[in-house]
Each structure stands twice: as C-alpha cells, then as structure tokens.
Amino acid sequence: MGELREPTAEVICILGLGYVGLPTAAMLAVNGFRVTGVDLRAELVEAVNAGEVPIEEVGLKTVVQAAVNSGNLRAQVTPAPADVFIIAVPTPVGEDHRPDLSCVEQAARSLIPHLRPGNLVVLESTVPPGTTGGLLTGILAESGLKPGEDLFVAHCPERILPGNILTELVQNDRVVGGIDPASGERAAAIYRQVVEGEVLVTSAIVAELAKLVENASRDVGIAFANEIARISHKFGANVREVIALANRHPRVNILSPGPGVGGHCIPVDPWFLVDAAPKLARLVRTARETNDSQPAWVAERVMAELAGVADPKVSVWGVAYKANVDDARETPALHVLEALEAKGARVSVVDFHVKRFRWELDDLEASVSGADCVLLLTDHREFSFFEPEAIGARMRRRLLFDTRDALPRAKWEQAGFRVISL
Ligand code: SAJ
Image (cartoon, rainbow, N blue to C red):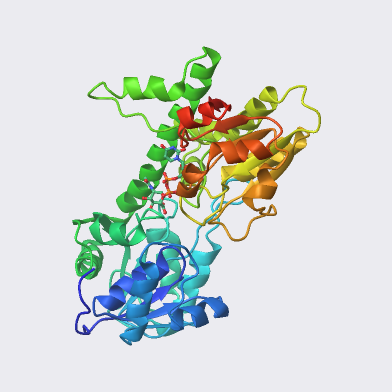
C-alpha cells in the first residue's frame, strides 16, 4: 500500500463488505478512488463507518480506518450511482453441492436503477462457468442498457489468501475476463491502479474457469496428501517424512495432509466444476469426497487410540479452518467433533481466535483437565508455546494427536506424552 493518493475521477460502488469486498473497498479508497461500500447488514455498515472491522486480518483495520478518515470510503446498505460497480458477494453451495447464486442475482438486480451508459460492472465472486456472460449480463440487460454496447461487464476473480489478504490483494497477478475485449481492458485499467502484480486480460469464460481450476487444483493436491497419509499409516510410516523425502525430487511438490479442508473456497468451488461438467470432473469430485471424509478418519484414529478407556475425554485444540485466522466456516473440526461425540467421547474445545462456534469454547485449563487426549486440529501459533508438563499434569492420560505436526514432538515426549501424527 502506498500513501494516500489524490482522488481520481472514477467513483466505485462495491457490493458485499465481507472477506473480499471490505479489503478491496478500503484498498481502492486509499488509492484515491471514491468508494461506496454496500452491505445488507446494517450493523456491519455502521461498524465500517466507525473504522471497525469484523474479522481478524493483519493490517485491515488500519487500512479501513485510513480509507474512512480520508473521506474516500463510505458504507451504506443500498447501492449508489457510480462509474464502476464491483460485486463481491458469497456464492456458497447448498446441501446438494449445487451452486447458490442468489446473492449474485440479488446484488445485480439492486444495481439496475443505478446503471448508466458507460458503466463497468465487475463480478469478483467465484461463479460457475458461463455466469458472467449468462446470468449476470441477463439481469443487467433488464435495465434497458445493452451489455457489450452500453455497459462494460467483466469477471475478475478474487485470489486473496485469508491471513495475508492485504499483501495478496496488491501483489498477486489478477485475471480479468471481459464479455468482450473492451470490457476486459476497461476493468484491467481499474485494477492496474492498485495491483502491483500483472493484470492479465482474457475472456469471461476463461477467467471463470481459471479461478475454479486454481482452487480445484489445491483441493486435488491436498486430497492426494491426505490419501498418502492413510496409505502411510497402513504401513506404519510417518506421512510427513514420506512427503518430505518425495519432495526432495526436483519435480515433486506434494502439499500437506491435515484433518480435512475448510474455509469458504476450497471445499466449495470445486463443486461448481462438478456441477457444470459431472461426467468430466471425476478427479475433482473424488478429491472433494476424499477431503470431506478426512475428519471421520481422524476421529476413528483418535477412538482407536482410546479403545477401552471408560468415558473418554478429548481436548480439541483449534477449530478455525486453518492457522491464525478466526474463521471457522466449513471447518473440518466441526465434523471431527461430531464424529467423536457420535463415537461416545466427551469433547472440550479451545480456540483463541474463533469467537463464535457451534460448540461451546472452553478455556485451556478446563479443556485439558481430566482429558485422555489432546487433539490438535488447527496449528494456531499460541499452541506451540504451551508447556507440555503443565498440560500433562492436569490430564488423565498423556496422549497428543498432532494432526498438523505443529508442536515440538521431542519436548512433548520428554514430558511423558505419547505423540501420534497423521
Ligand atoms: N490445507 C491442507 N493442506 C495444505 C494446504 C491447506 O490441509 O497443504 C487446508 C487448510 O488447513 C484449510 C484448507 O486446506 O483447511 C484451505 O486453506 P488454504 O490456505 O489452502 O486456502 P484458503 O481457503 O484460505 O484460500 C484459498 C486460496 N486459493 C489457493 O491457494 C489456490 C486463495 O488464494 C483464494 O483466494 C481463496 O481460496 C478463495 O477465496 O478462493
């Protein structure tokens, strides 16, 4: 992020002030655009206008405060006229794994009264192939203006990594896909003013597919690592050692196994490909199924260790979907907990980042008291600072199952713990 810039002529209206929309709005505002951030949640709008942010994300509060104080960012619950509209709303999947585009539809419809000839509409939300040129342009055309003639329309999928949002927002390359070349160029010109990475222009369909393929690639990679974990376990080998050594080959780069895949992107987006091409996306579907079954495998491993223990208690460390974030959306921890309870274990959950969770969150002392196992699911940095001796003294049995290999094994073993990994 550079210093506050002079206002530019362009006025931007961003729909959705979530993980993507809020940082994007703030970043555009500190780069001189006049930005209206729109969200249906009135309390969020009020918080943003007061310089507050609802999520734990390095530097975000500072940038939002700078943006609000500069007068360039203002949040409200309804859209306002603008030169550029950016849609950054959620696109989840339903129970049936089919895409739910209702937020995109609603956001696009809310723009209709504000559209003027020459406007640019950019869709940042991850969408099934064909959405930008189909559903979105169809709704925008209800304004009486013709996309491609009166309106520029493009897809510029977000690529930011939660936990490192501001850096990635600026440094990552961006793909911009227009419904026609002029739309692509018009949108790229906006992003080039804030992005230090390259802005690569293509068609809307290629941009949609590239985004889905990025996240599916990661999901397939993690599924491979999780499958290797199960195979290594069968042969009594440590999977991390297997992978570390395989990765010493110059053309092998295997990801890390874990207790499953969470977050609002990787467990969701690959289903868009499966839904759009069910007969073709076979590997993608299998990867989803493998990763979705990982929590049950972890729970089974825990219960196998506790076989014969009366009224077993498990102290679960970390329920956020990954380290050092407060986000528990689609977290595999939920399924591990459900499976443990279904198998008769008492569970007690500790997480210093997550504020709200479906399970009650305990403090560390209560959680480990009388526990038969510490099960580390999320490698939050705080966990590595705990003294195994003090933890063990409160437990009934000194057993640590470290699904992320995050804790110093030798130190825990010295304190009398049996330490197991995936
Ligand atoms: N995970 C593993 N093993 C690994 C890597 C990750 O088990 O080796 C697990 C994590 O613990 C977590 C899940 O996968 O539960 C997803 O975490 P992540 O860090 O891979 O990804 P997200 O969901 O935080 O962000 C992803 C990113 N996409 C890619 O890296 C291809 C990000 O750049 C996207 O912007 C984001 O999805 C999104 O919004 O689409």
